[in-house]
Image 1: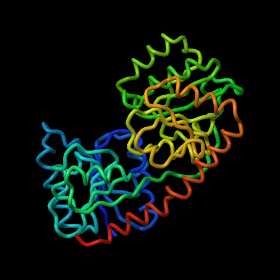
Image 2: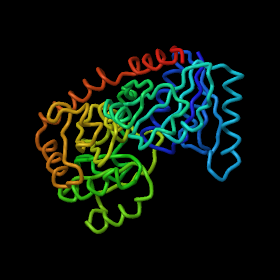
Image 3: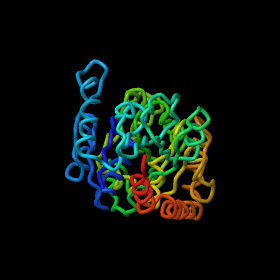
Length: 340
């Protein structure tokens, strides 16, 4: 089986899932090639199991004209079983090739459908996204296939590596530092929890603003900006609680990664988590943008060990039952076998 991917994302949860899926498909004997942006941090994680073509596909670059011709030529020559674009912009690369099924995978809510003129099926990672595309006029195929993450338990880093006391309470979060990820809300929440440390993995345009906020709250001694990490699981494993504070999150891959390490999770009441999280059973839910709500949820987990253990166990059970590699990879392979 052959599959060609078109993926022009940067660095974040969607890219981590792309890496997971490419490797899962490779383990099942699927031959793959991918068009990606140059100099991606995660390129080395698919190199060797996936052929790689690097391109920016920018409006003012020669590749804006040449790359669509190249991917059409590749499809005609290699006759893949499926073409798969990841999100809206890469879907413009989808050639009008009639020889196989053409899929566009969506991890967010598109505002318009003209990106997908050559797509046969939209693969949505939540029911909410599937309902949305139908509501704005999509009449071709729609499938819901969610994400998965590695379920392997990883040994924690030594907290001393991040200048954090072994007996401190540690809250962790990670993602791109953009406003919708809600890290400013989390900083304010932890500011109201004396002695609690906060680890933030990631980077982005809001980094300076978040650092200024940390200094303004007098928290410099207990907040650690740890940057992008190829492997975040040892840090998650070393924390006590994982928090996902986004104001908008179609799914929430990072929650699945925390559940894999059997950590209790606090999440905002954003779209994705409201689909698969049950307050008090597999996590705690907090009001979007309300630091007091997040502080209360974090405080409840820190003060109630039985609650913390219960939601951590419930999260791990949800992960294993709903977001397994076997189920997700098999669902994609079944799609690849369909005729256009």
